[in-house]
Length: 431
Image (cartoon, rainbow, N blue to C red; front, side, top):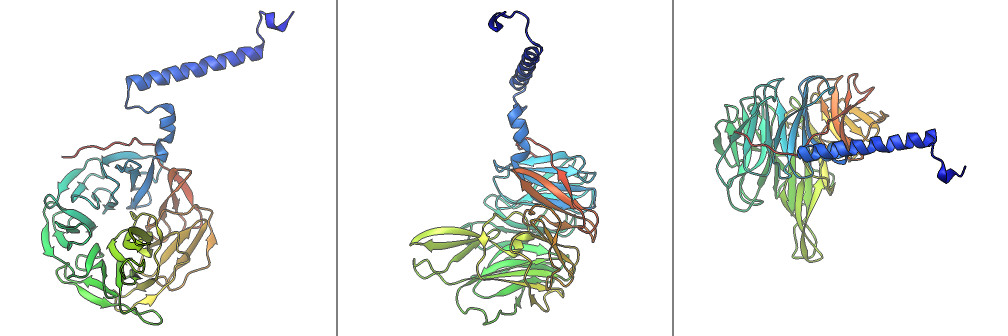
């Protein structure tokens, strides 16, 4: 009989027909669900949800209990929580982030704060491990927060501008002693022409600033931020330039340790394209004249590899990196293993560096490093390496647009990949 007139189908044709029918039924069911429940993503959308955000902050209080901030392409942010070392995750809050960097800090398994930078100051506070959050607005309309720094659940500091040009108006320092319910205006930490961009407090009394100005000096306080002392920094070979603008950022590591970045820009000379004017940090944002036209460049510094939130950019030119282990009494010039990767620390002297497939450590505050060892991991996101102790560490990474964490429980010998959940891009209101 002619095959075209065969009435009994072959087994292979039967299987193909049944497969097509099954696929069609699945497609119809999924389409119906999306129609009846518009909030549910379509199949293709669901598969891509986890690739639509990047990890912008990581904070663990012990090897099992931690939180990450997820930033979506829309600019919205969400806080995700794990109670079991990444085996399961719960979405705890969402906010309209408008693309701003975030500040995430937990003090134990219950108390924590979350806030955005670059917009109206609002602090989100939780006392039940993130199960519920309370929004605490700070200052009035027109204010813009530059930096947050909390020492414990009650004591914190906020650097903000309250008016004028967003990049040139003086910034003022505010202090809270009740977890953000009320704030006291301490005043401007630096005088013009210097500008303050970021604060970091390591103790209730001790803090450092990130500033720009005509001299390579750091600013430190030992009296809760009420007065700030100019701390001279050792010059590189050949000395510091006599004219131009310096960015000086200092971030505490642990105890009496701190890391400093000094970046120099020559003075602007008309529209020749020589020199630059520092406008913001982080990231280090500089206004230049490129070919006679004004332009803005962003640069990466060593501090961006310690403080997540900065945008990626070219490595800052003329950067001098310094380290102290005695609260700034003495400084030493250091050189990390690579300009890329991430740096973490668990005390003033003991640091780790993790790059693409490599791991190195220092026992003297970054003065010397062990030979890089192959650990078979992808490159960490800048600033995401968190060392809990000598054995436990976490960092965030992404590959093929998929975010995940890497963790070690044996002092960096072995690392395990921790998957992050797919989650919907949405914001919510707080009271």
